[in-house]
Length: 499
Image 1 (cartoon, one colour):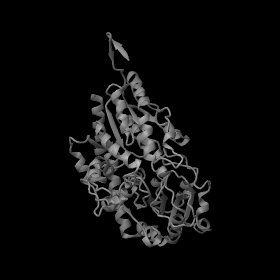
Image 2 (tube, rainbow, N blue to C red; image 1 turned 90 degrees about the vertical axis):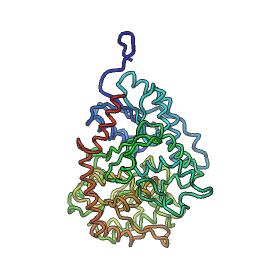
Image 3 (cartoon, rainbow, N blue to C red; image 1 turned 180 degrees about the vertical axis):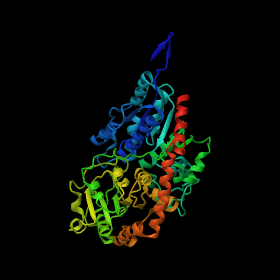
Image 4 (cartoon, rainbow, N blue to C red; image 1 turned 60 degrees about the vertical axis):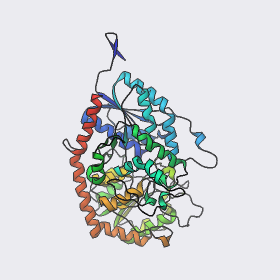
């Protein structure tokens, strides 16, 4: 630390913020883009802290696109083997939470160093890092904030979870409740559509979410990756300060920009260049979105039957005891929920082999199928993209809204089912296909074809397209100087500068 007149003084220079991201590109990307905005719009320098468990080539390549005033640091690895009993793996929520908790000493040491070498004004952790706010306090009272990469509906659920938990009758799960769960200013959500880790109150994942819900109140403030017009009712509620919770600051949409989403080695952008405007349905269920084999084939048959152009990012299905068994399309491997993990499924490097025989050849005039990954920001921004079939992950939702692309909601895991409720019933930018109870809980091909036709050409699709265009313009204006999200972030920065 600098010394002046025998007394320690704070280092000079621009304000500096340390940000912690949970593992997975679904967390790293919005944290990195928030840091990019803090530097570009408000002149701050930043250090992004990441965990050793997520130190992948893809993550390193993405973080390398940040400007030099934003540095990155990988925290030392912590032991997690005790969480992996021979009988099976721990829930991803447990792994993420314990990794953050066990990293508090390393984060404390890092913040102390940053405090001595930079003008450190704040520490910002994302939603699984609430326990690490202790590190900010231990490092000499660094103001500790949270960055919530999801929406106000999800944040409201977390903040009210202790009350909801206490009111839940013994022996019942949220999915057993006869009435939807209603949160202040939010769309009512059926209990079965609430956050996936809350569907088993006896699980470690449930206990950790309840733990985080209590810890969120330790934050000086919570930045949220949303904007008022996307959730007007909830935004109005959170606009008023309440003594029982931290102030809430909607600063979104914080999204990846075109050019920061990787190289197009798939050739899909060149294929889009040859398609008519607004004619292509982009089908992408996220980097963790693997459908069972039977559902994958129903989706393929439905796309073919629709006759519409499509660009489909296909991932291999998870292993099943019987490849042709009908499996509920809403089931998922929770290990993919937050890591957004890559890699092949079933030990196979060619997910296209799981499609119906001859599908690729039959649809080659109207369809383009790529394995595992596509540059999503560029695809959504392309003039030929007319709609997106999405898993309703919040990053994908915001990227779609920011490019004016309506959606077909196909939720899989995490908070995606409650996102789908909001997108279809409140925000009204998405349509949802039928899920057939008599079809083993699947979306059948005929229902895929029907929802594709509706979103591309139907009246409901036109209304969703008009609505998302309104939100796109509102979001664009909100991010400009004088706009709501820009000024909200500027207000947070002013608080940091004063502290």
